[in-house]
Amino acid sequence: MLLKLGEAAMQENQDKIDDLGDDGTTPSRLIMDTIEGIHHTEEFKSVLVESMESTRLVMNAEASSLMLLDRDTGELYVSMPTGPAKMLVAGKSIPKSKGIAGWVVENKRPYITNDVSQSEYFFGELAEGFTTKNIICVPLINRENQVIGVMQALNRRNNEDFNSRDVPVFQALASHITIAIERTRMIDLLHDRLKVKDAIIAEIHHRIKNNLQMISALVETELPDVKDKHAETVLHGISLRIQSMSRLHDMLSEKNLKNSIELSEYLSQLSQKIEETMRSFLYDIKIELNSEEIVVRQEQALLCGLILNELLINIYKHAFREEGKEGRIEISLTKTEEHVNLRVSDNGVGLPDDFRLKKKESIGMWIVDVLLKKLEAEFDVESDEGTRFMIRFRDLPE
Image 1 (tube, rainbow, N blue to C red):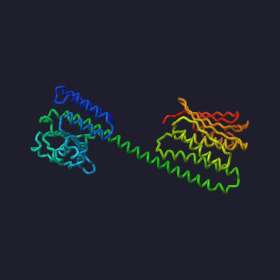
Image 2: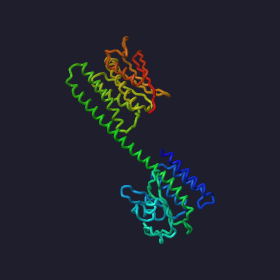
Image 3: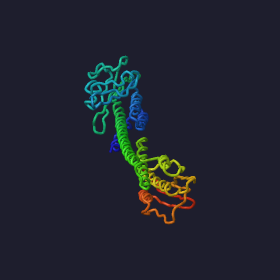
Image 4: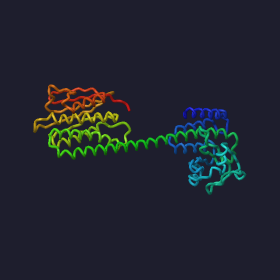
């Protein structure tokens, strides 16, 4: 809706400018170049700078200023002046009921005087050393018909006067500047809201991470008292699964990511943690990761992390039964045009002949099967001089 209203206003002002013809006080081409520059600027301060320099250029004036209405104080403050006294007047303010600017705000009409000493509304100079001789001032009226400020040009060069023919030109320029200001304010507001949202999301991930780490710590605390070897292994597996989820939330809170994760970094951190944990009570096995830089959605990353966690635990438990043999696990992560390929291989004893992914006796592989379905991934396994698990899933857009 905002775009539609903006286009309508621009077309109306284009008609006003075209009516002037090239013999007008200000060439229409110059005005349109000025307007184009304003509308191509998106940062708020840059819009103000561009607008005021354009005002001075178009109106052939010694100075110009943009005075915006402060909704909290009800005052007009000089937000972006140009000219010889710009450093002295920047940031100054006047009551919205005072001066020529106040009259323009109250009446929503333009004002011209070529002798400010004869104007009953002139508030006085805002800076010493600058003398205002003549002035043209127009309101900035938004699409809700509210005045958000005024724009003025001061002291036309070559001792010339402002005249009624300047009004539609200045109003047309003011209309475009108003649209640009409202647009950039909205963009800034949306950016601020996104920053707040990102901060909240990051805090949520941080709290989830802390809670998961607390649960994992509680599990690890109970491990020394567990006498049953199988129970100890199960608890280690649970702890590693929790840590896999915790590490993902840690990355999300640290980097404030929106909906994506650099998968190789995540899997590298997980595999290192698993290697450190399993080394303490199983064989010393080397894990190597070879990967391209691949970014996936955070849900996909979490599923990949949990799948890798289960596969590595399974390999540690079952693939290496000969003490003294140098164990090696290789993780490969590659990407094609549409798919991500995760391959986990080892140089262990291989899989038993009756291996089935959905085999109920293997909780870990049953979990892998469930996670693969959630990931909507294809799965292949080969067992020849070791075992190779190959996973392939679509690289879904954010």
